[in-house]
Image 1 (cartoon, one colour):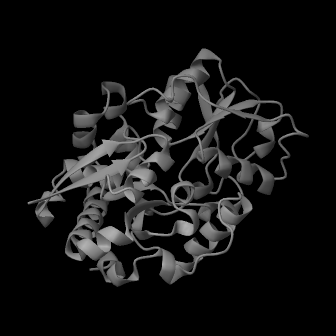
Image 2 (tube, helix red, strand yellow; image 1 turned 90 degrees about the vertical axis):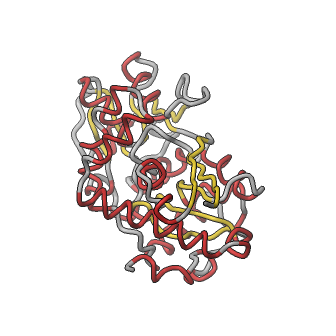
Length: 310
């Protein structure tokens, strides 16, 4: 079997779960690949590892690659791990806020990870919130930069400790906060809570480099087939997520991952549409990450797109 390395910037979450599950459930092995996942945080470091040839694939947020590879040069998106921007805004449960009310952030301190914070800033701007005028502070989360720590889990802990008023993170962190009674979901653009334009700010994607494609296109195709098969398996049986959680997650997170995945399977489609790339370009330019729009065929590895529906 060929040995490959998949980098992910957050392991204990739903964000990049189809790629992680493809390793743990044996779908890579079914394609003749001996794959292992490696946690590399912050997210742009994972893309630096791909750029430098230290890993073969990344499962991560597409926009974060721009810090490592300007204009996405040298990289290709192979497929979506999940459709749409996947982070949620969770606020303290004791605050008088209602779902969909972006004004809840006024005068508050919100935790967000590097580069992930750019999507929150743009979402708030598109919702009519001015960070300076409205006294919104976007801050780091205590403990989130420690090796092996999930940002979302650390953010939920920080919310409970009173270090922040809210956080912008994955659904695992949101689930922990909601189930413990300390937080409530205010914004979730994939489910209509927030401006519709925010859906395509970024996406969770399987990414590789032009160099890897040139070196071993068969391995790249096999990797994409493994992930697509995993998406279909999880859609058919979300309970498979529990097996992955028991291997990789702390007990608390392992116990709830299947419930989270069951809510997410509607987004487990590998297609990358032209609309998604247009939205990604527009967001990246607005955030100052991208100078000029990148053409669809220059960003997406279209030679493999038949595998999305194979």
